[in-house]
Length: 208
Image 1 (spheres, rainbow, N blue to C red):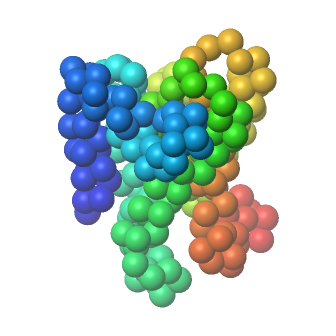
Image 2: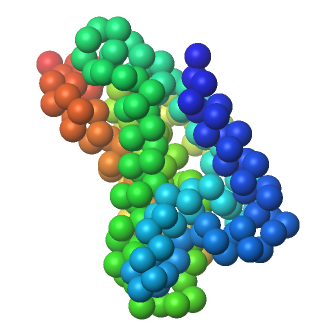
């Protein structure tokens, strides 16, 4: 159960840890909009999710991925058993990798001529997983600051509002655009796969 999540975490942890002590690996894999656009190094759109800024950055992303990834994998397996989707592993990988890819697009456009801009981390992909979980279980309880329990849907609204605000403010080194876009992709992915799944979300909220 949840083998894909574990494999992603293991691979990401190994590559990230290797990159911490090997600048060549880091430079080869990180997100560089300039190199993606001008040197056609398109692989970076995916590989940036394999490297992280430091151990804390890596740990936070992987802990969140473990917490939500296992649940989302199980949801896709249940949907497969119900005949609603096809291969559960395929959809989980599309969700994760799609989050990694789509979350970079606005960043690439914004910084395509900035030779020195660099980005790392799986945050966009992880955000997609978190918000897919919110789609299917909007009233489940999530902990703010690890202490205060609030409904997942409220957490999602706060997260998006905060990411949008911080993106406009733009005074830190965090790619809030990637967080926002990855989250939106994760939330709408189930509807893209099977539009009737919107009923699952609405039923959870008592709207149907």
